[in-house]
Length: 279
Image 1 (cartoon, rainbow, N blue to C red):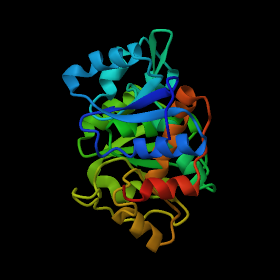
Image 2: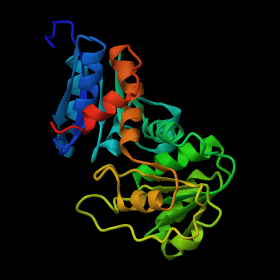
Image 3: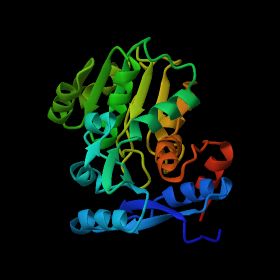
């Protein structure tokens, strides 16, 4: 696509950023909707992050996504925060308006919309959810589940004190358990979510016996490299509905694209196939 002098600009800030699928994702939408705009990979060292964001705003960018390791710095830098960014304590989406920087976090939206779409029979209010991990991704998942009305959330992390602090901070029926209690924590659960990197390409496997998990419970893994993780493969083999991590990436991008480019895009099978394709 040929850009004009009025092209709308956005991008993704990270260090490194070459692995990001976001430019491919947003590029698909820009082409599909015929928008005069561009979405760029923006590799920025942590010590230059604040200066880079201010420069982008001065240069007329509409905003940017923020990925590792900048999400906390973006939270501190923003002039205002959405309620969900305040609740999660991190920012993954910046919107520049009238010289001010608004920070948002769409990870929870992405997780919940992906779950709702891929496992439409999952009932949020019918039973416990089990969440593995207590990092930044877990915060977004916990807030989304809490706000959806899940009555009990069992949080397990390899370092239990971290899980306890997070449970105390967020409230809403979140209960920290020892990592070693993973198998028994699955009893009577309606949902299992892995927010750790275990099972990702190049990382150790997630060791988990699913025997106690009801077969109607949905199993979600935020990892999407590989797309079918060992956890999802084991869940599929026993008949549980499964939700891979790619859909979260796709759905979390919708609010930012709408804010920057003025069109609310759709997550479609064609988009999913394009983002998964090499390139």
